[in-house]
Length: 438
Image (cartoon, rainbow, N blue to C red):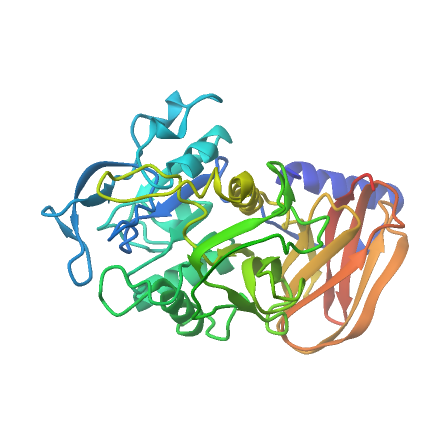
């Protein structure tokens, strides 16, 4: 993870510009995308019937008094979990050896793991509001790094969809989890695959499948070892370890579409699916604007087996698939939390290249650039050293307005610090990145 201070970066570039006479950097304005907050804050949604029927998809609950008879939650005449904002006991009491039973909730193991990574965990209660840039809401999405929504059973309102999509576009990170078709737990006519697809195709921000992900209306159970061959993918090969299998217990799959979003990547596939293909995807990740998305087709893998006594829960998180679900889910959480896809960007002149992201950073052998064009333009993408000398011509071609992306090999670049430059007739963007040891 590359942590940059705006003043240090500006001084660094100015020093190099003056010392090495890099006239192309003589006049510029800085746009530096840094962490949304100094502390990674994760919000688990409990406002869309995630605790109805036999589900308990929250970190913790002190009360079991919610009812979901025929739709929205009502209090206080039922026996379903009522998520409170802050799990109890206090997160400050968690140590490296704290068990998942420290909190009571079907997602407590996941949440305790997040706390052990020094992430702050909260839940959005059943009557909470999903907003973005609403100063009257203390749990506004602008206050959080990651939003986890595990099997929603109440459709998102138009205002909620706008808030979520705008938040992601501006840098938010969404972990979206579905269940199988026909899993309408509260009997309101909506199940999670339909709810997620409605979010993706019926919103005021971008209704053209902006993540490149569509949830299939399927219901299947299987254990698969059909994992994509992506050595540099940190969801598969991250800090928690290497993911080698997954087990779906009545879940669904996804169909991905790189043509509408080049960043979308399938990482775990059904046994019969083509590895690296666009169908039969069980776990995927993507990017939209400045944000990131992780997507899973089953709510069983995060289930830790303990929670509301009125529910029958299973040890999907730590036991099923030989413990691989914990590795996959936490690797993805860490990937969402990191600013690996955001580089220091120097905008000079009047560049029409927007929302640039470079990932991973540091990079191994393959680097990825994603950006948005305001108009059709001919772009030259090149790699320069710290003296401004061009080392590699990555691309020189006409590109269409909208979301764009490209990948290139850094295998011939020694470990060190470099700049990428995206140049057109209207200006250019320059970003700093690191190549690690190959």
